[in-house]
Amino acid sequence: MTGHTSTPENQRRIVVAGGGPAAHRFADAMHTRGLEGWHVTVLTEEAHVPYDRVTLSKALTDVDYDLTLGDMSMWEHESISLRTGERVVKINPEAKSVETAAGNTYDYDHLVVATGSDAAQLPFPGGELAHVYRTLDDVWAINKAIAELTEKLGRTVRTVTIGGGLLGLEAAAGTMELGAQATVINGSRWLMNAQLDEGAGQALGRLVTAKGLEVLTGTYPAEVLSDDDGQVTGVLMKDGRVIPADMVIASIGIRPRDELFRGTEGAADGPTVEQLFELGKKGGVVINDHCATPVPGIFAIGEVANFDGMCLGLVAPANTMAEIVADRLHGGQATFPGFDTATK
Ligand SMILES: Cc1cc2nc3c(=O)[nH]c(=O)nc-3n(C[C@H](O)[C@H](O)[C@H](O)COP(=O)(O)OP(=O)(O)OC[C@H]3O[C@@H](n4cnc5c(N)ncnc54)[C@H](O)[C@@H]3O)c2cc1C
Image (tube, rainbow, N blue to C red; front, side, top):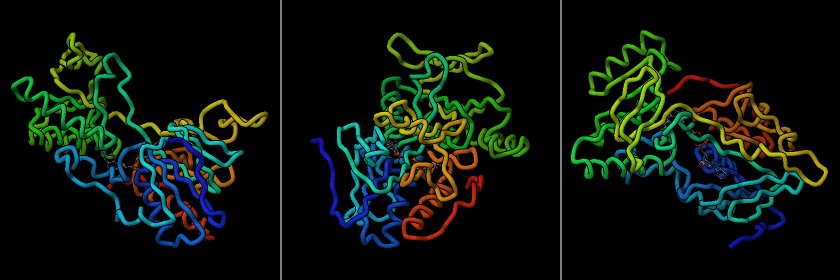
């Protein structure tokens, strides 16, 4: 059913686009500060209630592991609505409303965009055959595929993870726990090169190799190979080597989900969406230290928000931004202090 939502007139309506950790923290921060006079509607495209992406790997090895963030009773509050399976496809700043893929329109007084990031796809032939590692559905799909391949092939499944950062290592370790023989390929000469210097990265490489993970560094893949049925058979490297694989997982980075701020459409004779907002060089919508975009009433928090020229793939700043917006909506003066890039 499609429709136009309305809330009691004496309530100020907040719509949150996105339902990840930042959106959850924002709803929680509003709930904690008091919802009198407010109505918060969270629209998330995923079928799940907001969950803890940081601990996603636990659901790779145990599909029943409950990652739900916070206390479910919050979503039963009369001033909070959570709509799963609702993907926001358009912001109409002039009408102060958003539209969803299902054809629903939600009016707002304040819009908080918390659409996060998605996993980058492999940019070479066969890349579309690789799994990515971002959502609950992604890790469930990997778990299922390993079980099915083990049965079909009648031997140990070989996984190759492309990307030797934190997430790539988590993915590879998870597949090993599921019985696979795992290889990690990293273009840099050492693992976790964004966080560690060469000495520490080499030491990490020795530690994980001792645990049974095959590590290939300083080398780049060129193609994911497959048979006539589309079953992955290996990874062709730029140096001509073929690394045998039954499954490939891409963990090569993230891209901000800033598509709501891109587009040449605008209100009649008005500015386009792209003219209203500013996008960072590598994506993400630019915010100020109030976490506000240049459009009055529209905030952005979490990984989609570009502050000081960058978007950061860490949960702590996402939580801080969520608290700042809740504080400001309650009349506070909190400001975002800038990113602490330490990975915990
Ligand atoms: C495996 C893994 C391990 C991690 N480990 C760590 C760690 O150890 N430490 C750390 O700090 N960080 C870690 N992170 C990163 C951390 O999870 C993110 O920083 C955090 O999830 C960001 O939250 P977010 O709400 O901004 O974005 P997201 O988590 O990406 O959530 C955005 C949500 O919005 C939905 N959405 C997107 N567009 C729309 C739309 N148009 N309409 C409706 N819904 C939409 C998405 O489907 C998603 O559910 C990890 C991430 C992964 C994947």
